[in-house]
Every structure is written in C-alpha cells, then in structure tokens.
Amino acid sequence: MDTSTPVRTGQRVRPELPATRVVALVVSDLAVAGAPERAAATLHGARFEVEAGTVTVLTPARAGRTVVLCLTGQLARSGGTVETGDGPSRRDVATTSWQLAVTHDPDPAGPAPDTTAADLLAGAGRGAARAAARLGLTPVLQQPVAGLDPAERTLLGVALALADGPDVVALEHPAARLDADDLGRVLDAVRDLVDVDGRTVLLVEDLDRLPAAVHPLVDAVVELGPFLGAP
Image (cartoon, rainbow, N blue to C red):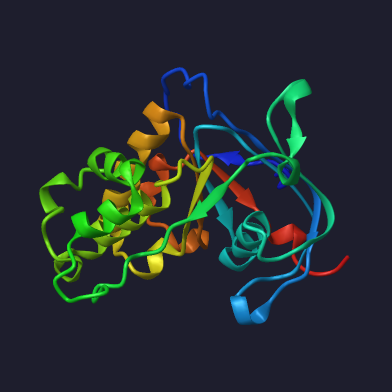
C-alpha cells in the first residue's frame, strides 16, 4: 500500500462544497523535530494530502500531533512545504490567512461551578453559537458544563473551536475520553458540518483506538508511520 496518500475508508456521497472557505492541505517532504514534553514525535519527509470537506485521520497519534503542532505554529518546520488551495491559487500556509483550530474540552468546573454551556458560547461569539446549534447542543445549553456528558463536552469544545471560522478543525485523542458510543455520537454530529458546510476535520488518533462502528464516518486515513524519525 502506498502510504504517501490518504486511504479512503468509507464511500460517502457529499453535497457540492460551498464556494467559499474550501481548502485542501498539501504536505510535501515535511520535517519537524519532535517534542517529548508535548507528546510529539519527529517526522522526516512526510508527504500527504487532505481533501477539503472530509474527516481525515492522522495516525499514529504522536505523529499526528506533530503535524497539528506544526500547523498551529507551535513546532517549526525544518524542511518541506505545507500548502493550501488548488492549481494556480495554491500557496504556502505561512503566506495566507489559513487557520487550524484545535478543540479542547471545557473544564467541567469552569470559571464558576454553575457556568453553563450558553455562558461559554456567549463569550466566544456568534460563530460558536451557530456551530453549537448545528452540533445538536441546543437542548443542553442552559445546563452547567459540569453536568454535560463526555460527548456533549467534546461537541461544546468543537463549537468553541469554530468560533472564528477556521479552515480546518483538529480533534486530538478523542478515544482517550470517549467510549465507542460517545465517539460515534461526536463523529456523527461533526459529519453534518463536514457534509453540509464543507468543513475539513483532522482526527488525531491511533487506528486501533477507533471502533469499527465509526469507520464509515471517516473519509481517509493518513498513515504517518513511515515518516517517523530521522532518515
């Protein structure tokens, strides 16, 4: 199997993507020094593409985290290119307004024990509130964050990450905090944003942590194992 390109794991019929904010990620010969304190591995010569409007798994998780930290500017590239766009419009992400947002589950305690999901969303702006509605969180918005179940907190984190309309959203290690049923709930809700809005989602996870039941919700897998370590 050619590991330099994503492996499609499920056939899905998607609507035509919106005309705006459609992105593609093209990575060529990426080299990044790892950071053990950040659970990030060293990559050398990584090559892959992420199709716009998909849920794409970056695996193994440590290598995927390296990519995410690089894309968010927390780890520097020592080589290679990372571009976005198609054809003549393709540009290095460093020269564009391209943005990746990483989801983080809100602290259940919050700034105050009675902080509700609506309180957090109000502080993040209208984009987050709209995303929360699309993710099915409307019935729980008035509940304290501490009272939300793990799937709802994860989806709230996704909504908050979408506040500023990033081009790509990354979910890191969701299987570490969600059981199979909750992970299915989260990915099923996220698919609406992917299929209808043309969002692009990166899922950083070890493949053996993803239950078989959620495989149809994933479009592609980028296997980064061959690019781990120095040449």
